[in-house]
Image 1: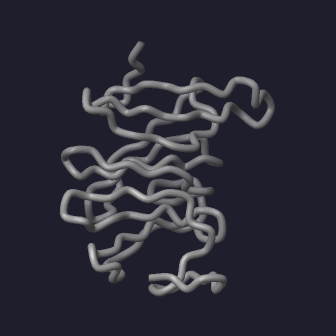
Image 2: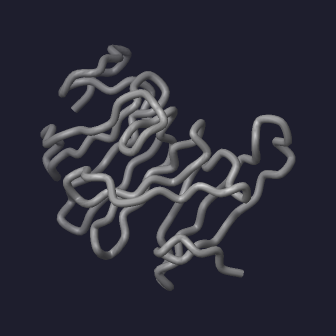
Length: 145
């Protein structure tokens, strides 16, 4: 999987990937964000399975997918950093929902906690980067305190 110092956008190459989320069976998703605007799924053996995502701001489109996490139901949460949102997909890459609010600036990274909360590292917005913070959501997208 991949080839060192050989960026690309095909099944055998990545281009500045940003994060990885590993499933129970060893398969994994990669957010291939800087050079490509996609999410790629690989088998536990590193074989390409499928990908999704194109440049843009609509459902299933990305502008720098930066962080990725998978919950216990195998829903895939993607921090779409430059679109200032979190997108949620099923295990096949089908769009389910998006979380976007004035309280969410540029999400960089995320993790699903043992309490089933979604923890997001938010880099603030481009105008006020000092607003960086960590945010806690329910898996339904509601803010938790």
